[in-house]
Length: 109
Image 1 (cartoon, rainbow, N blue to C red):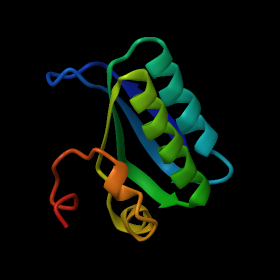
Image 2: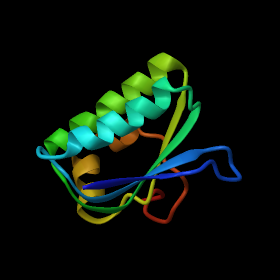
Image 3: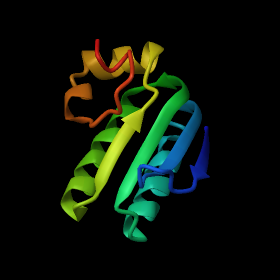
Image 4: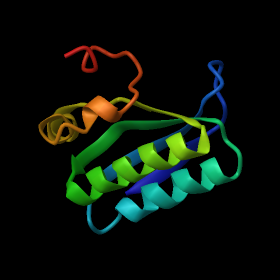
């Protein structure tokens, strides 16, 4: 999995773009990168999951940890680009309901 940092956009959000599989072997990269940004004072963070091809329970756990950590820190965390198998996993595990998601056609389903 690769984590790419994008600068603050016009909406005031810094974006972490996730590419590849978010699973037991590399979910910690997502957690580390996002928590580092939040700890450094980023108040508006978006995680772009359009490039995530696979998500397992460890990846789901990482997302839960990030949502909880952002809330405790008073930071805004949003997600975008969730589709395919990762979306199905998040819907079936009922985690999608605690995630703030940017409006996309998939998010409206």
